[in-house]
Image (cartoon, rainbow, N blue to C red; front, side):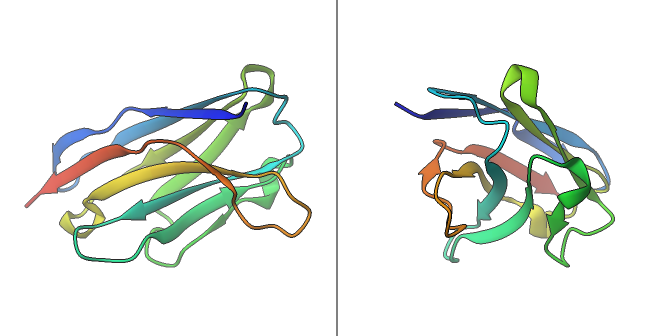
Length: 119
């Protein structure tokens, strides 16, 4: 059974940094695409960024490009999200996800970790 567990969320001031981590278990994830999503109160869940087995494959939403960096350690089945220069609009629950299918849709999710950025 696939399980994803996020950690690293918290309350910070605008301009600060946080690093989220996601540990995956249940299979080897090295060749699966992994991603980060977020959901703010009253809003739809949105894509933050994703990464394939090749670190150079990382893609980001325009709202976080240049501030957030996704990395992965395939030996440890972990994916991380380094968030710099945080803004109040980054406040959301952040979810780790993995795409286990050939179609590319993300089909397994973590429970989420809260990130709150105060102004």
